[in-house]
Length: 253
Image 1 (tube, helix red, strand yellow):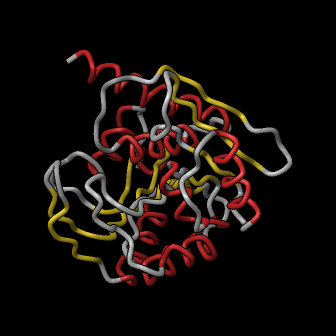
Image 2 (cartoon, rainbow, N blue to C red; image 1 turned 120 degrees about the vertical axis):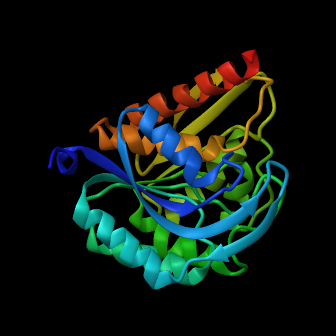
């Protein structure tokens, strides 16, 4: 079958009934870049654009079985990880990643919804940092998530953010993309940190428009470009431009 030869991104995450974030946003992003998707659903949620009302987690063994089936069925060239919900699901995902070390994984560490509802159980952050992050090619925290991941106050400037990112690298992460969407100023700057390399900055004008799911979108776009065999830095650059153009279009509507 021709479909089996096409590159796929395996998307691991939760549903969003409003369509603003989660798996819906992941699929539409990856598809628009011309890459196919397969899925492992970690949770079903009841959401509007304003609030998360209910969360129903998948059994961890079911998440792992979905991942293995997708990897068996398709040419999975990258993995994008979003909402994980519980320590047990983190363990399950990490186990399958260890079985497939050649497939690059992008982790968007979804810790809370835009409305503030926790999307990861208490105590799971340390497990994510210890057991999952070292297995991922790239982790993409925003400034709030970055602070939570290292147990610190939110960075007050770029130097502070880079220091926090370096702390995550020291904890075992392969590469960190610090997203600057929650910072202030006329420019939105994301910073790529890797071991023994100078930070690389990806800079765009800060737009007045806002939309839900931009974190999902960025990580998914990066994963799609990795699946198309682009190097990491180029994949990040293309992903950043993709999100900027979507926000620009949203502002114009």
